[in-house]
Length: 304
Image 1 (cartoon, one colour):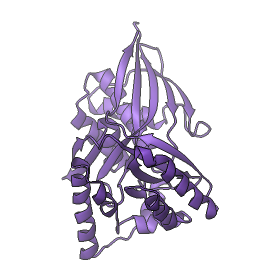
Image 2 (cartoon, rainbow, N blue to C red):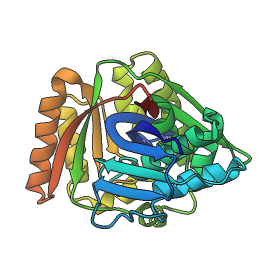
Image 3 (cartoon, rainbow, N blue to C red):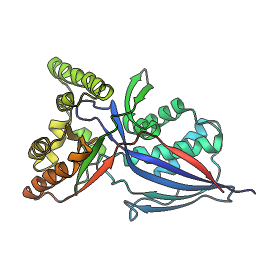
Image 4 (cartoon, rainbow, N blue to C red):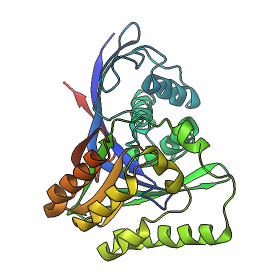
């Protein structure tokens, strides 16, 4: 049986960007990678990186389950595959680790079945994860806007401004998505809905028109961030410090616990230092990273 080897790279993502709950995504240059070999007798999975002590290295693995799901939905039996997965994306910190794993599995299924239609992969990603914005950003790259219409995902993308970078403050606090959703209100007022609608629209124009002066207002939120930020000591003070240091927009990344600031590249060091100092003053154990924004989505190459 002839073997074929592939290398996949899938970006992490931040989502919501404050106001864009379950709508906005942004790909980051922190990549989950997979070396996959088809033409083997049985499936074998090796996993390294974040969560290696607890992520299953068998067919329970999310990446493999996503691969199998997409194959079966294409009317194909999943081929045995050998996978070597390396994941540098922190788990349960709001940086799209599960979205990247799902996207990688979908891409792998696309290679195996010959179906790499982006719209279909995004749809399957939503069905697997339950919300579309992280998978969309990981699959497509750039700044993405996702919308559900009768269960169908509509997603569009654009490239973010070139000199914007992300500064991530990553607390030593895990917030599972299910837990983060339980704290949200079941009902909101008309005024709160309007508040967020205005800011999501402003985000889109700010990204398309380099409207850096609009981004702080665009990232304001009344739907989820006030409730989820309570898990993070010093959250409001960290935001204030980031703005004082020159950030354009700072928000809870996804459902947390990461706090992410968008700023000009030449302000990244100052923003990072300011956020870390306030975190320390609140006894918040954390790490920081400066991450470039990723214009490309999930990609693969065949190896010799």
